[in-house]
Length: 228
Image 1: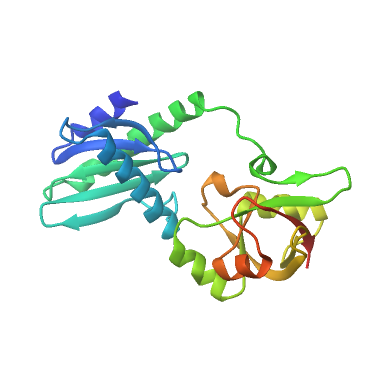
Image 2: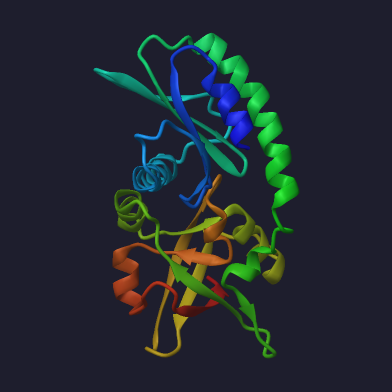
């Protein structure tokens, strides 16, 4: 993968490049020595918050941050994010062509090196012998986004999780009832299905601070899922 990043670096104006995973870890990099590992880890974490908080689609060509002394370009694609540090003189047309070729190669390498993807239930849902569906509570990393749908009294699901629940109950989803058996609390909430989410949210129910307080739950707690 580093060889592919070095090819991207050959484009005039590219100072360095890196490949980040959707969960904010560094997969590979081709940066000058002055950019240390700690800086790259921080960049990966901030890139995750940015792309996730803005709900940036993989179909977006380039996210371009312009500064007085340079530019940061971010290219998302299924399974990873390309992070580029560039000069202000970068030729975007040439870079776009190079990235298109690089993404195809990187997608193939990522697929070859990754284990088989688990079903959404593996991340947090459990179907017990009594036929009850249980899922873990999760939070969005971006607190503003979390507070936005929380203010509407809604919970959120990734698209694979929504499909799984619909299949489990054999019905379309509009509202779900969450039951915290341990605390004796429950609530029925409209469902927001969020596309292009990190796979870490598959098999979980995403709630904001208001609903978390109402149900008396914390991140990682399991609740029973019922059709509202």
